[in-house]
Image (cartoon, rainbow, N blue to C red; front, top):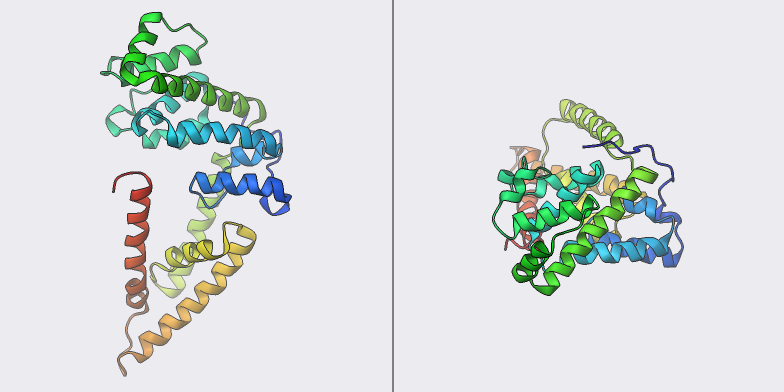
Length: 277
């Protein structure tokens, strides 16, 4: 896979500094992508809110509402990203491709898969490479996917070609920042555990609850999570000391009583969103 310019040529838009119209666009993107933040690529595109609104609307359709099944969508994204060298999209989507096919996506071998996978990915490869698709291939895909499926497939390829051009031209920093953040968080978490011991689920319950109550703005979310987390721990510690005196129950047991059901709730909700339940 070819490299592209990873140094960002345009600074990302900041949600908290956006005007009402731009903020409405940002909030819609965050909501439809089911994230608590604006992905870096969209944040850069957000410097032109009108462009972001138009582009994200097309992406919303091909990612979440197209006639193609979910596995095929992910494979098409990775196929186009491999052909065009879009590292950003490849790294975000290859993990969602069925495991047995991951090593074959982006190679000629994937085109030997039964329909619709093989023909659809051959079609995606040809379009992404700027080559014409033979009439017999288009006719077969029309028969397999229907008119709406063929149109959605064509638009999906074009959409991810556009994103590849965007990333290659303006650059999207992601991996360096991710490594720095993960390393810093791991060191801080390890230090906290070394001092206080293992206390589970606090980092799961509190940020999710605060995000549901106050929204995804990290300017509010981070301090509110810290204060609420401290309050939650004090309450759990009080319960642990008083529920069965003179015995003191381990604090981690109390947090697990609250955290385990909440974790199961989040897992079930997430699986419903992606269609498994």
